[in-house]
Every structure is written in structure tokens, then in C-alpha cells.
Length: 330
Image 1: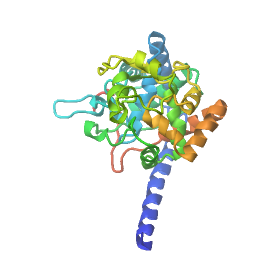
Image 2 (image 1 turned 90 degrees about the horizontal axis):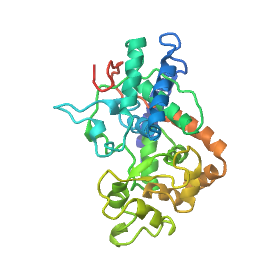
Image 3 (image 1 turned 60 degrees about the horizontal axis):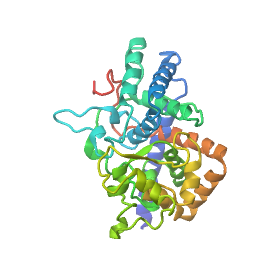
Image 4 (image 1 turned 180 degrees about the vertical axis):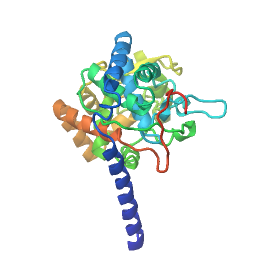
């Protein structure tokens, strides 16, 4: 690479970093303390109520926050409904039916509009809801900087290249997270969210077939722990190509936000290729071991990483708004 090209790349990196720094500076803990003091409490109440009826809401809302931030920034674009003239993000095969909890955001938004009309963004509601969900499954408590604006663009075609795929290797994952302003270690740290929730069986029987026909061998992936294979096959029979069958992502403590994900991956009980691949790189393998050995340390790293992820800004030049209805652009 020429010195001129290196200089241009360096300048571009500085611009990107300045955009992130500026956006993070605009967000602040307690943003609604004067304009809508009960904002976070209202969201917590709605999430807690929904969790009481369906604990699966918790991992659904955490995943939704992640999928939202990786497309156009943390702008609640994943909440927008498709229209006759546009297929929105939520209807991408990557998001539908894996994302759950839209009705919880709707309920929180309705309550907030009744209390503080036009004040609280859907993007902030989603960030608060993810935080509350993690706390409900015994994960770490953390403060959420707020002040996000809602985006005005949501297109199914934008999802595929921005959301990590279960078949990605460590290099591809590192590159994708880097494009979002996140380090490789933060990628390993955030991967630990796979300690809660489920995957639809069709992902591991078709998209990332590790159970029955790995790489055309008509055999399971040899990297899977032999004791894990029958457990997965019992949950996901060979004919499980529909989205109705599911399997826990963490076979040990699937309903608790803990560091078991890392110990699972280290003994080849990671569900996806994208989990197993973290063992194949010296730096990411070291991260797996560190997080498996010290849950408190991982909690601290996770809260910092999810706050950083939650600070991914809207696309350059995008104009945000405060949606009245999270499903519809004003």
C-alpha cells in the first residue's frame, strides 16, 4: 500500500472514530430525567410483566437489540413493519421468526406515549428492554446511556450483509464487528449472549448443518462433542426443516445469563460453527478461557461491550425522529 493510500485510510479511520465519539457523547445516562422521569421504570414494568408470562421474551429482546444495532445503527429500524411498497428488516429470513418481543416494545411505547407524548424514542425503549431482560435472567445490571433517535429506513435487503451468520469463521466475524466499531475481544464478549435463548432447528439442520450432513459427508461435524450430538439430534430430528422446532443454545443452564457458554464452547458444545470457530484463533481462544474462568470479569466486560454496541450511530447523513408508533415511520 502506498504512503498516500495509507494516509487516506488513516484519515478515514479518524473520521469514523470521531463519528462514534460524537454519538456516544450525545448519549447520557438519565437522559429522560427531566422530560420523562418515569421512562425507564415504565419499560422495566412492561418487560417484567411479559417475562412473567413468557421467559423466552428475555433472550428475544436481547437479540432484537443486537440485530437492530448492526443494521443502520441503533435506530429501532428492526421494529418497522413492511408495507405494500417495502419489505422491512423484521421480515428478513434472518429476523423472522427468530426475533421475539415486538409486542413488549409496543406496550412500553403505548404507556410512554400516554405519560410523555413524543419524548422517548423506540430505539431507547429497545436498549432499556434488553438491559432489563438480562437482569431478569440473573445477568449483570448496568446503566444505559440514552438519547437515541429512531431511523426512517428499514429494508430487508440491508440485513444479510450486516448480521453475523452462524457459518462465519473467526476472521469474517472479526471483520464484521470491526466495521461496527467493535473489537475482536468485544466480539468474543458479546458472543456470550448465546448463553440464553434458543435456535430454530432448521439453522443447524440446513443453514449450518452440523448434525446430519456436515460438508456433504452425511455425518455430524467431527468438531462437535460426541456426547452433544445425540442431545442435539433428539431435539432436532433429521426432518426438522421447519421453524417450529427449537433447541437451547446453552445445553447446561439455558435460562440463566452466566458464563457457561464459554465452558461449553471449550468442550465442543457450541451450537454454531460461528461459536466453534472462536477456538481456532489464539486471541479468541484466550478470550474463551478467560471468560470461562471468571464470570465476574466477563460480566464487567459484557456490560461495557453492550453499551458500546448500543452506541452504534445512525448511518452518516441519516435524520432521526421520535416515532409515535414504533412500527411506522412518522
